Image 1: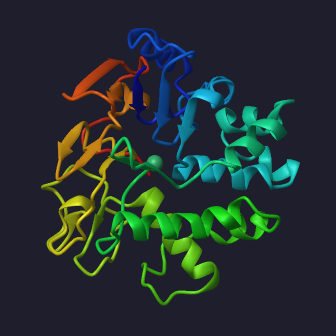
Image 2: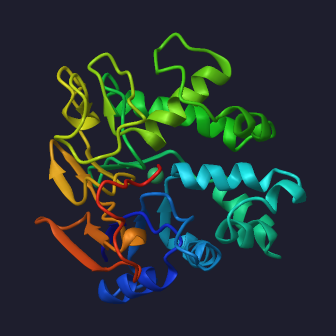
Length: 284
Ligand SMILES: [Mn+2]
């Protein structure tokens, strides 16, 4: 029995299959933790979503920014849906889109297993969030996403502001929580997120820190695995294991075993595309 966390799939179905073969994934015994951003950009988002859906009895998923965008697009009119990129359009127009998106919407923003000692999020945590606080805030938004009024949440989730603060209410509160869990890279010690900063650490503006290095951040008793930050690459430090290694950008797809005593990492080459030109960074 093994538990594996897997980085951002981003619609790279062939690559995902190769990784599952390489880790000798056994659906009768093993468990997969998917870090989110299952879809978009890879060209095989529909196949990828169907694959993860078919593995749902053996896997847990946290939602990434691209997954939430797909859910929002799924609620738009057919005319609006025809304006989105072909990769996501195939998902929303597929005959099984209702089943796939209904299942995707039932996923979480944070998954933790205290017996195993791990927590998974897509992007990051606010500086003052302990594991318990992060779990509480994730449950707040999940309750809305899984409830009857989820369309209101999806309609109001877009936007960079406000930054998280405990006194927020209503849509501002949900948006701030979603932004932390699904878009965080850099922030200030007071928790201001710098959404425009997407490069590797060392290039960011003064006063900004990778979220896991912010001075004064909360102690977290669980090890953390996350994705989202392809320019960071594989980063293990500060109790954090960042495993988005840019499969969709021609990098790698990474699996990290969570139930082994020693760090065990398995990678396969990503999508067969040239890396982005120097200086050009992923949009989100
Ligand atoms: Mn992401």
